[in-house]
Amino acid sequence: VWEDLLRAFEPGALSISFIRDFWERLREESLPDVAMRLARIRVLNASSPLLNDDPLPMEWKYEEVNLRKKESRKAGPVYSGLHFVALCRSVLSGTGRSLSEILRTVIVTSQRLATHETDRWHLRTVLMGAPSVISVSGIVEAPARPREYYVLKQSDPILAGEFLKARTDWLSHDDPRLTPVLRGFILQAIQFILDPAGFAFCDVSECVLSNPHWQAHLVRTHAAERLSLCPRHLALSRFVASAKTVPEGTPP
Ligand SMILES: [Zn+2]
Image (cartoon, rainbow, N blue to C red; front, side, top):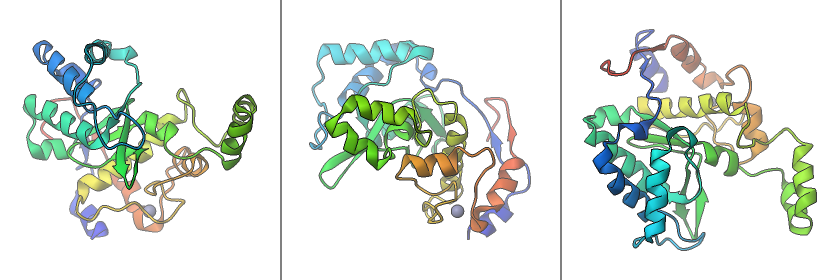
């Protein structure tokens, strides 16, 4: 199915329109409402599935100030990822996007997003949906750091910090390797957009469409200069090489 899908597209059929700041699309009068909705979808603690239904005025204010900050927006609270996707969807449809356009939209955010599974919240790197959302903080914080780091951290946090400095197989928040890493996650989202019902992470650990649980794996597959794709997904690299960027507003 996957190969057939790729063949169904003419070379150059993938056109990408890039929006610099998604939140800038908000009208001034809707900022307080979106800020309130963000404050409400905060995760309260790591184990409780309850969200912040009744935010404090300072929490609401924080979100409003942060939305206005543009380039220097902070990433602090953890939000329910599924609710965050729904909020993005409502903002996009409020700015005139159709559902099929929203399904083909990928948002990259610095905010921390989590989903509640079994008995606790887990940070997520990417949430596939309408739209798909990739969390840069999640890429840095969700896949586990080297096992030795956690052992050291319990006995000596300073030594644990030094241990990390000596290693290169994990990402920091200002890591230049985040750019190639994001390329891999955007490809995953494109794979979802092409075939939402058939989407699954690749089970070949060297493939950029796999789902790394460890930083070392993430750095090895996603941060490489050349795209690392398994034989089944290799066609995607030829397809993406023919992609063109179109000015914003061009029908996708
Ligand atoms: Zn693969």
